[in-house]
Every structure is written in C-alpha cells, then in structure tokens.
Amino acid sequence: MTRPSLDAHIAALDVDDGLESVLTVVARTCAEISRVVAGGALVGAMGASGRMNVQDEEQKKLDVITDDMLTQALLACPAIAGVASEEKDKAQIASNPGGAYLALFDPLDGSSNIDINAPVGTIVSVLKSPSATPVEADFLQPGRRQVAALYAVYGPQTMLVLTTGAGVKGFTLAQDGQWFLTHDAIAISPETREFAINVSNQRHWAEGVQRYVEGLLKGADGPRGKNFNMRWVAAMVADVHRILMRGGVFIYPWDSREPNKPGKLRLMYEGNPMALLVEQAGGKATTDGVQPILDVQPEQLHQRIPVALGSANEIDALAAA
Ligand code: F6P
Ligand code: MN
Image 1 (spheres, rainbow, N blue to C red):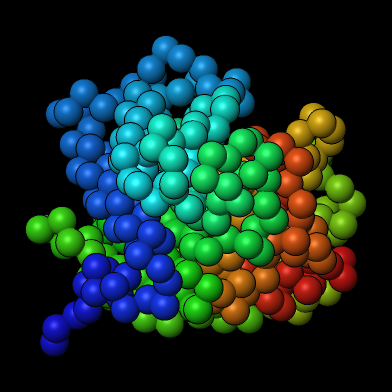
Image 2: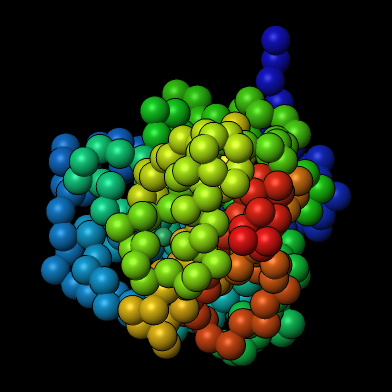
C-alpha cells in the first residue's frame, strides 16, 4: 500500500502557498528535532543549560537547542511575519517584511522527561498576521482564529498530528526523514474510562474539580457507576496524543497556590493549539468544563490557563460536578 506523504497532503490542502510553506518548514524542523532528541548524550543534548526562561523555569539544553532550531527555520521562511516561543520573553519579528503568518510554539514540551528517556514533543500554533510588520498585540488572537495547529511527539515512533480546520490527521516519521499518513480522520470517542490529572495537587484544586475527581476515584461504587483508570505522562503532548488515539480526559486545573497564575499551562503555546486539535477530533477543550479555550481573548503572550479537554462526556461530567 502506498501511503500519502505529508508533503502531498500539504500540497493538496485548500490553503495558500504561504501557509503550505510554513507547515513544510515546521514539519522539516520537527524531523530534525527528532534526530537531536534521539541522539541524546551522543550529540551533547542532555542536561541543564544553566539558564532560566521567562517563566522562571530552568531550561534544559534541549529546550534551548530546539527553540533555536524552530526560531531560525521559521524566521527564514518568507511567509512568516513573526514568531513567539514559550522559551523567549518577547515575540520576534521577521527582518524581511511581507510575511502573512505568525507562528507560536512550545519547542520542547515536557522537557523534564528528557533525562528519563520518556516522551517529549513540540507544539505549534499558526495565526494570520494582521500586519506585515506585526507588534506583540497582533499575536493576542483567540485560538478560534488559528489557521493550523500541530504537535510532534518524540516517542517510540515520532508522529506529527495536524489540523488546518478540517479534521485531524496523523503522520509517522520514516527512516528517510519523510512523514507518511498513518492515522486518517482521528476522532476522540465521547465515552472513556481513563483520566489524567496530577493528583499530588489535589488539596489546591477548586471544589468542582475535587468533587469530579472524587467521583472518578470511587469508580463503580460511586456516582459514576463505573471504574476509571489513571495515566499521567507529565508531557502534555503525550497525554493529549493518548486521548486522540483512544479517548480520555486531561485536566491541568486552576489551583490556589499562585492566584495570579491560573493553572500551569500556557494559553498561546499549549492550550490553544491542543484545543483546536481536540475540537477538530470531536472532543471538547475548556478551561473548566464549560468555557471553550478557543474563545478566550488572550491578554498576554505568556498567559496561563486552566485546561480540561478530551472525551465530550467527561468534560460534561466535570461541568456538572
Ligand atoms: O509544559 C508544561 C508541562 O511539562 C506539560 O507538558 C505537562 O502536562 C505538565 O507540565 C506536567 O506538570 P507536572 O510537573 O505537574 O506533572
Ligand atoms: Mn510545555
């Protein structure tokens, strides 16, 4: 059987040449990142960089390497007007004017997994630029306006999962560095018996989330009348990938520790692109079971947001808890 390549899929999309070239550059760079991630200690990619990022988190060497790879590749693409990275304080504007698109990315999601050889990923969100010489405010568009969202997961296989607003497709990286379609029309089943939440933060959660998770843990003896299983990879990309493959619910809720940081995840680099992929696969992506992430008006580039996404019936159960 001949499988369509990602290049062929991109060429057949009903989008302009500019967006095609942005997607091509991102896919090529993710394939290169996959090689560096796989090389690990052999290519000097392990350990801390000795630097902190804008979120006050210690950067791993791979955070810095992958951020540089994506930034350079995208700023060299004529269709790009500017980029914003989870790892950088400010957005960067392309020196050649005329680009029509903005790319926002988390270059290496779940980077604490690197040292234990567990999955990590890259997440990318693409918006239209309102201007050929954008300013930071131009990046602050609701997720509903994304023209593409994708992630690459570097696991036992490297996969790239993409939406341009007409469903979700998954591609697997072959030995020759090309991506081939392996997962057509990805759909999230509305029913699930699997949840993902970092239970060590339970005492800090709001009451609704406490009640919901209590109900899951009581299983067949509780209000839900069925047993649930729990999984937590500690890399959002891998947890969301599991949900796209076999259903489930992923929650990183608001908690009371730092009231000025509502949740841990970032709206522009994590919440929005994952929400578009999840909605396009038939799931729900909300801040709290009710409010769609994609409708949130961003106020800051590095804004944090509570996230509850996945199988529709569980998101509804959270809203009702
Ligand atoms: O990017 C933040 C992140 O690494 C996510 O990928 C992941 O879901 C989460 O943090 C893990 O958080 P915790 O450290 O609470 O397990
Ligand atoms: Mn991340």
